[in-house]
Image (cartoon, rainbow, N blue to C red):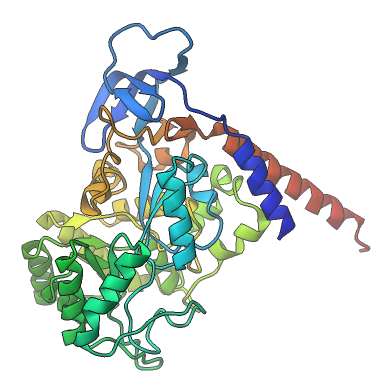
Length: 436
């Protein structure tokens, strides 16, 4: 435990104490919605001062060459479970995380850091805190004490308690398990009561689903968004059309979470495991999670249904958000986001649509002000990459620089690259001294 703590302290110390003015010159800009060529973007302190700067920079401004590069908003991962490796997402360009369930104390600590303006070395975190589930239901198996519900009459008090703790939105679980592993689940009246209670307090209600039936039930109850889709080989055309129409009519957003659905189907994020630039930022203890999976055997055919659903949702104009469910087997914070972007393009979204689903769209969906766009006065949470990710989504992996609240993250990335290399060298040296 001591070594990770010392490393975290060293990484934090590697950042400058304050953010100064920076000008990224002659850069392609994806502003969260549109692409602009040959822009000059001026950062002043923690904010974007001018997304189309035309003047001469003042003395002392740091100049960054943008030719052949693309500047975009920092990535927003719309589904994580943050409980460790809080420094990791930022190294991969993820500047904001939407947390779907974590300990209340961690949620409150992160909120306080953000409010004090002291979160330049971590991704910002907006959390549901505790999730709503039935006694013994999904979410109760992780060792975190959870106040559960059994009746609609409990809903308003439960929601009020979460808001008092600091929950940014309300997360509800509607999952009954499967034939071999059934789970207790909330009944539909309690689901509806929770959604209504959240709305009465001005909070979003998002619902964890695992089947087409639970997805429809959540939408009919008034859920603002669905967390996950459902794995399967096929979906009947009539069922698909009805689900898409319901989602569109209810103006709900959907977070497919291909990263974890692939894990359920026993499929690894092989593209991440094979990417040296991504793996060079992961310590040895952080790699096994990527190699793990929920599914015991590879069943890639189980991904046909969710891909078909995403394509149909996209064609119908339903709001889609990029989220990884990081914290689960088969994922890793930050690194899996780049796989999620690739998976969404493979399901039929264009690269520009996917970039929007990881920047502007989640900021709007979760009501996060002044982030997710490159615009005057917005947070200077930015990602600079080689190439053009609006043409090749893989370009998001070719990171040149990340800025968090206007502060460059390159010192953190350099420190982590050094730590990983030193760890590998030490392990190699230890192995070479072992008797053969």
